[in-house]
Structures are given as C-alpha cells and as structure tokens.
Figure 1 (cartoon, rainbow, N blue to C red):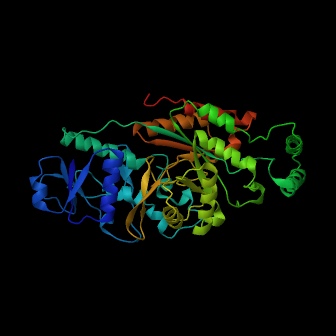
Figure 2: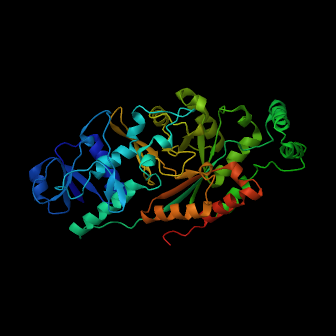
Figure 3: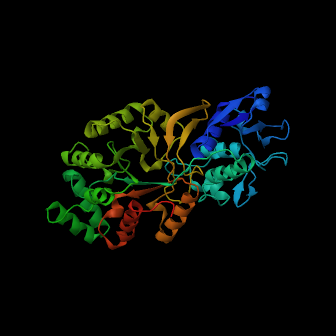
Length: 429
C-alpha cells in the first residue's frame, strides 16, 4: 500500500489519487492527516501539499484540489520528459508539476464548466479545448503521466508491486438508423423519394425502389454480419439504438415495429446493447426514463450503457439524469469530428460532479474517435498509431462506427476491414 499524507483529504484529492494510483496503476493507497502516523509508516509513502516535511517523496500541490467551485485558472503548458504538462511547481517537488491537479482539470472537464463558445448544437467544440490548442489532443496525457509517476515510485520503492495490465479493445456501433429505406411508413418513404429527386440522386431513388419492392435487402441490414464477425472475438462490442424521436425527421421511423424490436433482441442475445438518448429527451428525466424502459422491455435486461444523440453532451445535467436512472456507463466523451482524447485519457473514469464536489458511480468511457473524424486521413495508418499509443499505457481503445459504415459499397470496404481487424487484434504485440 502507498500511504499519502496531506493536511486535508478533500473529495478532489480522494478522487484523483484513487484514479491515478488504483484505477490506472493498480496499487492500493491510503490517506492520513496525522504526521506521526505518516512518519511511523515503514512502507511506500509520499506527502502532498505546499511544503515537504523532510526528505520524503514529495509532490507539491498547485492548489486546485483544495479549492471548491470554478474560477479561471492560468494554464501554462511546458514539457516533462516527452509529454506536455502544466501547473508547474517548485524544484522542491519530486515531480516538476502537480500531476494530480492537472489530471483533475482534464478528467473533470473543468474547462467545460467555464464560459466558452458552443457550436450550433450547443456542444463544447474541440477547438476550444486546451488539448487542441496546445497540440496534445491525440495523447492520453493523464495515463502517460501516471506511468511516468510509476517509474518514480518504482525507483524509490522497489518493493512496491504493480499488477500486470493489458490493453482492452471496445468497438462501438451507432445504430440510430437501423433501416435506410424499410420500416419507415408511407409518409417517410414519400419524403425520401422527394429528397432523392430534388437532389438528383437517381441511384438512391432506384435502390430505394428495389428495396421497398423486396428485390434487395435494406443496405443497413448488416446486423448478422456484425454479430458473426465478432462472435469469436475476445474483445468487447456494444451496439447503441435510439428509441425516442431523433433530431432530424429523415432519421425517424416507428420504433414500435416488430422488425425493429427483433433486431435489438437479436443483437442483445450475443452482444451488449446501449441506448442513444434522444436530444429532445436530454432535458427531461421522464423522457429518458421512458426510452430506457422501452429498451429494457425488448432486451429483458437492465440498461447499463447510454450516450446522447449527436454527442450533444450538456455537462453535468445529462450525467445526473443517468445517475438518477441507475445507468452505469456513459459513452459521449468524444469530439465527433476530431480524433483525440476529449478528457486526455483512454481509461474509463468516474464522473466527478464539480457543482456538488462529489465522486459519482457513473463511469465515463472515453472514445478516441468516431468514423466521422477520418475524412481526409489514411485510416489504417492513423489507427495503428492510436492503437500503439493506447497499448503503451494499457488503456482501453474505443472507437465508434456508424451503421452506415458497413453497407456493402466500395468506399466502405476500409471500414468493414477495420472492424474485422479490431475483432482479431492481438494485444501487447
């Protein structure tokens, strides 16, 4: 056990130390505010505060973890070994910056509570983030810092045992539109035809006609392929469905249709199923509750996973709704059009409510990218680069596909191949 001395054990200190030391590095920790107990402890120990007591391992506090609420904090990014860092402290500290305050700043999404410019859907844009502005968005710096801290601990306390860790792969699929042409009803089909003609999309007009007449399968009928491709995989796969009214009429259909329910039931029999909470329901606990109940009535299982439509994450209200409904995992921590780690970590972490200054049981699952973010890049090269980065710190590699990525077209071959590759990817190679 690693014993940590601090003058006052605040909720922020308890939260971030347990994440960095226990959730990431796998070591047990304890806290004390009693100097005599700290001095008498014969095992690994460190002090955290403004001043060191002697020659012990000492990490100087920047002060953020002793505060409450929000205020503008000056952030000056420097270098520590090969990674960026901020919240520098004096040379009395064993580490040149307060990694715990910096990690809390990034994981709590402190900057998203402060005044900022939102995009057209009210989202916090990647361009407003510190990680984007300072060029470290594609680095899981919180995890990198933790492993650099591990080196310091191992050097000073060679008897400290760190359990072996391994990277995890979690493939996610957004199935908000499980039918492209079928199951939409006469009105929606008519609107679809009008849109095809208005934009001179004759190929789409012809395929729609063939599908509706029963000569072709719906292009989004790929769920059997998803299940069969991933059935023998040891990696995780979760498919998310929407059971509310979508933001755009073109994506809507009757979610009470038997065919839709049978798809959810089929996928749920083999893989994990999650809920895409509709944007219209995001401000209403009762509406999210209804959508949750609809999904549970189909799967006969308690819902554990959820995300918000269009990733329009309104912190902290949406998270509080999920907590109220006892949903344990949330999957909107991503910038939909930008590759990178929104919370600068690839390891799931608990949501810290900065308004109430409390750690919650809601586990935030960071996603490195959606397929929308790879418009002008070599996907395979970028994926290998990201996989190596996550593998180096034994994190969780999560990527979100859209169901349309798997339709049988030549442009989607790369997405289908990538999905297949992830199901058979060998860890720690």
